[in-house]
Image (cartoon, rainbow, N blue to C red; front, top):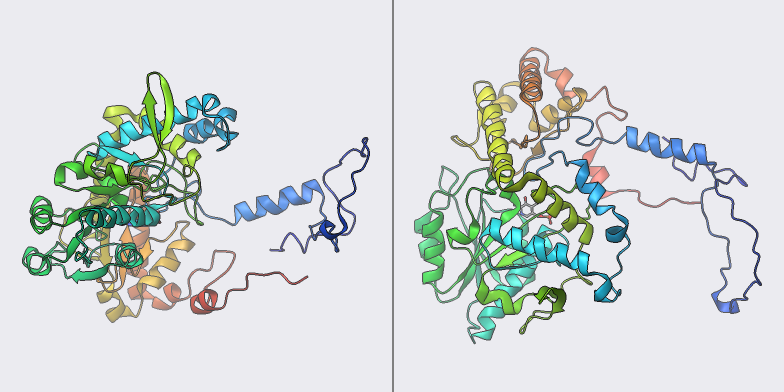
Length: 476
Ligand SMILES: *Cc1c(COP(=O)(O)O)cnc(C)c1O
């Protein structure tokens, strides 16, 4: 399709601004633009068609099944968008006098109360813009805590190999050395290896639970005890909270800090780079280190407070407010019964699909799984030449988004499927049939799968060139 600039024709316009009826102010010469602004000149209907065409060529949860593992691409109730679009929320300004922003401050205050309840924590900041930045903030708290205790020798963070890639990256960003510990064949943390790894230089552990292979750690209490006994702190990557919310709480498992991806679990549409929010919750003893500011209630008035030993700002102002409004709306509409129900249904849906597929595809780990499961297509590749990538492309021809591929990298030819709670049994059955059909076709006529997709606007692309040599500018 054409770029909007290629649709441009000199003199076409879609907005009519009335002639100036006040005296024209002269700008200083050096501020005057030397060239006219290069905007596309296009009529309103052609512009509307341009964006409609773009939308038609995009794929989202409103188009079909979107089982991207480790991402929780659930359907997000429209009421959340309606609430965040209310004029008093949408038009709020960070420099507004706080007397005129009490309602928005109440949103932060209430969201903190509910999310600390759900996670078993004592306080929360909403400043981080995403999960990865939440991790950074959380590990900065851990560092600030040790340094405040004069404990400068603690310079190592332990990260199991089933962690999300952002965990070791975060530890490095905060200048910690990462100690990687391998998992047992059943995908869980090896306690013996963990015991060998801890010592006087342990700053803490970063643990993803359920892990990126979709499994709940069996020995979670022992893990946090081993770390605490060594004097370290425990960080919980809560990106997979969609599997456990309302049932178990990181705080009760012994964790000191947790981040949430509220654009995953708490219902903000995501993809394409955000905006999201990665609030972190912490236990009371870490509260003094939280980024500024915190919303507190004094009498019946909300105020901002700077935590006493704050690590400072991690983002301008107060974070992505609209995302927090959506999360709060989601929690309040689901309520105390709906929150665990959503998680249980997510886990049920994943186990249902896993069960229906396990006789045809090899599963990477023994079940049951949590909200997602990982298949390994290694046998399929050896027997037919069809890879996980080929299967993903064939799924596109069947009107669905592929699962996460080649992740986690400890599994060969991995496909990681997260159906989420918002899919019906009919949809899951249809998807299972598609997977089985593709599997059968791989044995009967592998070329068909290797040439997929054929029903999409663009066929098989050269992914290496697309990633290494992207053309991101338009030459006039
Ligand atoms: C998505 C994810 C992250 C990173 O979160 P972003 O919001 O994408 O920065 C971290 N850990 C896990 C387990 C995740 O799934």
